[in-house]
Image 1 (tube, rainbow, N blue to C red):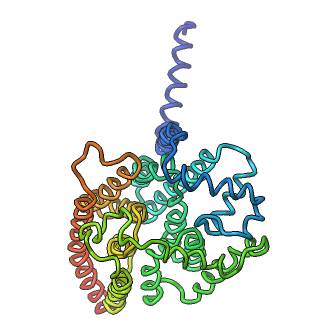
Image 2 (image 1 turned 60 degrees about the vertical axis):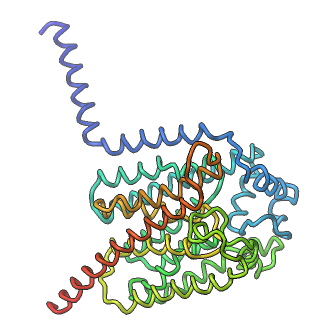
Image 3 (image 1 turned 90 degrees about the vertical axis):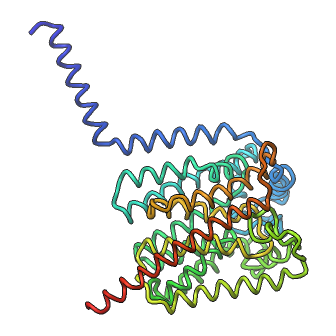
Length: 405
């Protein structure tokens, strides 16, 4: 064998080793590539300043700095909860551009969220390719990176902890699930959109009743550092949420919901609509409790998706960002009900359109907030039609299992 043939043989050996490596670790390699591309997309928007940042977030950040970091807990700043202010205080230590700091936190959680969505799909489907696709879908979903990298909002944080909680629910680890749900609720009041799911699953014994203690202890311990720094314990625990509940008088704050459709509804009826909405959600919970169902993974995701859409759709005073959780649960729904992919496409599109409107305006589109509300309503109606059929089939199948056993 001459020198050329030896070199050729070695190159072939190296190439075959590379091919074997790629085939063995192809999904990991693609995950890394998706990670890099998603990061580049987010970094390209790093200097974009939204109105929320200009008029609120930047001033609140500076006030935390001016008040001396942890000492700032002696006064209420913006609508920060103690949990989120801990993060802001930590960020002030770096003395970097506040805009970049806000976005960096949310971007990090984007990737954590994508990872746990992938883990959920892996747990449910046992399919590595679907796991990768779910992970990538979250990373490249405009609703996600618009919120973090452009808007500098933090909805991804409470949503991530809900998804982690959901993951541990499906893994039958109730105490971990409830601990992470408590963390989620400590960041954003919108975490209550997941509360009906928790309630139903506790009554159906899918979640251990005693894990409520874990929830309470976790939630009650989170404000302790803030109290030590000078905050009032009640205010740190729930006071900020009480203030938020009465902060706005408008029936709708750019959310594509029922009050966007019927925009001339008197604001004076807001309390009545709030109680009616809570009653409606309560009725759904009772129906789910009394109806014999097999609470498998797909059923739990379906129920979570339903509540995450219905609650912000019928509650007054909802902001445009409040369908963020439903966007993520919609992706989970797609990968567990691929034939019904058109339903989440409709609801996620509706959610995206209103976010795009807030950030960049309605220019170039004929879609008004009223029409966007109708789009969201159509998606919810289609979901409910599917749900009734699916849950009836689930009910009949469950009864047959009981008869056999």
